[in-house]
Structures are given as C-alpha cells and as structure tokens.
Image 1 (cartoon, helix red, strand yellow):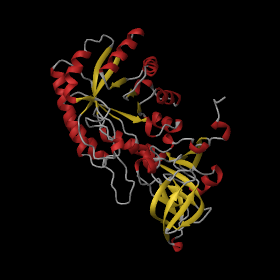
Image 2 (cartoon, rainbow, N blue to C red):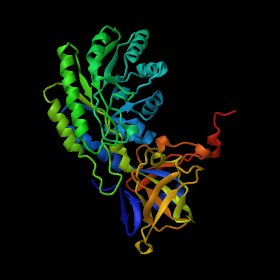
Image 3 (cartoon, rainbow, N blue to C red):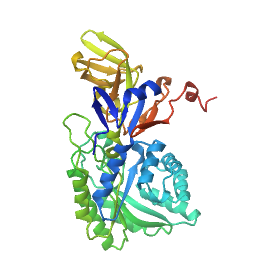
Image 4 (cartoon, rainbow, N blue to C red):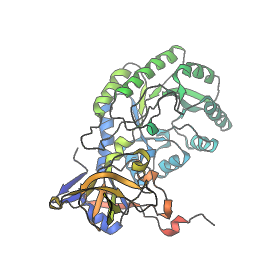
Amino acid sequence: MKPAYEYRDGRLFCEEVPLAEIASKVGTPCYVYSAASILGKFETYREAFGETPHRICYAVKANFNLSVLSLLARAGAGFDIVSGGELYRVLRAGGDPATVVFSGVGKTAEEIDYALAAGIHSFNCESEAELALVDALAARRKQTARVAVRVNPDVDPATHPYIATGLKEHKFGIDMSEAEGVYERAAALAHIRLEGLSCHIGSQLLDTDPLVEAVDRMLELAARLRARGVALAHIDFGGGLGIPYRPGERAPDVRAFIALLRERVAGTGLEVIIEPGRSIVGEAGVLLTRVLYRKRTGRKEFVIVDASMSDLIRPALYQSHHEIIPLRRLPSLGTVVADVVGPVCETGDFLARDREIANVMPGDLLAVCSAGAYGFVLASNYNARPRPAEVLVEGERWRVVRARESYEDLIRGEV
C-alpha cells in the first residue's frame, strides 16, 4: 500500500495534498487523516479472512470522528463501542446497529437500554451483575439480548501497564477459572441468549505471541462450554495489534496473524469477531502544529509549539513516542536536540523530550506522526483551550470534518 504521507520536492504531502496548504487555510493545531490509509488497513483485515465467517468491528474509541465512522461503515465495518455516546456516534454516521458489539466494564442501565432499543448485535458482559441487569432490562422490553461473556485469560500482553487488560489484577472480564460456572448460572436468565465468548488482552501489541496464547486458551474454553451444552455461535478475540511509532519498530503482520486465527478456528463453526482500532487509523493521522518560539534555559533547548497535551496527551500520559517532522524539509539547516513543548501550564506538557529534530524556527510547521488513534478522542479543554479542527483527505480533495472550537463553544451549556 502506498504511504499516506511522503515528501515530494521537500514538501510533506498527505495523499495528493500538501499539508502546508491545509495548515494555511485551517490553522493549527489541526488533525489530518488519510481516507486511503484507513480504507487500505481495513481491507487488509477483510481480505485476510477470506471465506472464514467473521465480523470486523472497528474500535470506535480509537477515533470517533463521524466522517471516519461513515467511511468505515460504507466499507462494511461493524463497530465495537464502550459507551452510549459511541453508539450515538455510530448511528449518526450511518452505521448499522446490527453490526455493533457493546464492550466495557461499567455499562449503565441507561446505556444498556439505549443499545437494546437500537437493536445492537450483542453485549460483551464483564460480570454476573451485568448479565442480570441486561436480562432485566431486556425483559421489560420483551426482548432477548444476545450476549457474550468476556473472560480474562490471564495472559501478559507485554505492553504499557495502562493499556494492558488481560491479567487477573485488571478490572476487565471474568476469571477464566470461573467462566464455566458463570455460563451455567446465566443459562437460567430467560431474556439473554448466551451466544458468544469474548476477550481482549491489551493494546499496542507488537508481538502476536501473547495474542495467540490467549486465542488458544479461549478455544479450549469454548470447547469445554460446548461440551456443557452452551450453544456458542461466535468468539470475540478483541483487538490490540500495534503500529510502529519509533524508527525501526515493525508492526505485526495482519495477514499472518489472521492466518493463524483461521487455522485455529477451522472446523469449529464459530464466527470470529475482532475489534481493531489503532491498527486501522493510527498511521492515517498526523497532528499539525506551528512553532511559536525557540528558548534556551541553561543547557536545555526548547521548541515551543501551539499544540499541547490538551490536543495530544499520549506523550504525557503514556510516555509514548511520536515522530515529529517538518512540513518543509531543509537538510542544510541541520538538526537540534530539544524538548518539543506546548503552551499549557504544566511541566508535563510535552510532545517530545531530548529529541533530535529539524532545526526549526518560529513560524515553521511540524507534523506529529501516527496521531490518528487516541489523539483527538483524548483531547480536552484544559487551560480553556478550544479543541483542534479535524480534516479528512481523499486523493486531491480535503475537507474539514470537525470545525475548530470557538471560545463560545467553551462555555456552551454553562450558566
């Protein structure tokens, strides 16, 4: 697949559009997404499954822009949601509720009722109390809710501890050793149909070995449940495949991983559900920012930009790495080692620390790379900063798909 972002004659392009053009017309900070990249990644998953019964449910939490969701809905994606608000976004974007799976450890009664009314595909339930609540709410509606029980396979995903979800000490899922008893007791609930089995061990996984270990444990459990008479129709392996953020990192081979899944589920008759998010949208996005000042304090060099932790919190929250590159490449100016920091009044407001970057000056434009996942969705109005615009590029065309917030937007709803 052709790279979404590349230099041409020293200028950085997204597809067929020079990013400097977008920055000059929309302003900065600004998120930009490549439609071709998003669709290309989704097609890689779909083609890899071939004839194996499957459902690719995009993880909405990674990037919930309506135009991104609409793009994926038209391509045939289902959706993995974790809130009523995400379901609302999927429906507004034209997504089919019958393709939606509802995950999350803390679903409220109102959210569950909303999902039942919408007619979603199924709930990934994470406790016996949740199973009982879904049953009670479905009974009021004279419905039968399809559910899967999310189990915790106790597999170490070898990722950042904040985004690991598959160990016994985590809040997610039911302990695998208790799962058979949970299914047996849940069978007495008249308004749920136990159709599935679900797990998700974590995010940003560059090594697929932990995922394969979890898959094997899940299939063993599925066989035991079927032997007890549980009529499983699908098995949800979650998402989690990572992307390369640092030079030299390699993303997992999606086709090779899906081939392993196909091999293991062959003959079971189970439909496979997966929930990729970051691996579809992560590399499709950049955050554009403008250099405001250069500053030196003792031995420390700072590049102060107009994007901050309120626009992209991942470096401060996860100590994550994003490559930062100039929109106009001028190798003759050399490089500088500096902290790239924003205007927010926190020492933790940084996009990079002690990073060798282009020797940029005030007014120059930079792209913070691989920002399509968990970028805007984690943005805030801290320091009363309006959230940035979002732009979608499709070939030679681009359009604003979320307007930059105004000061008036900051006080909407207040009295």
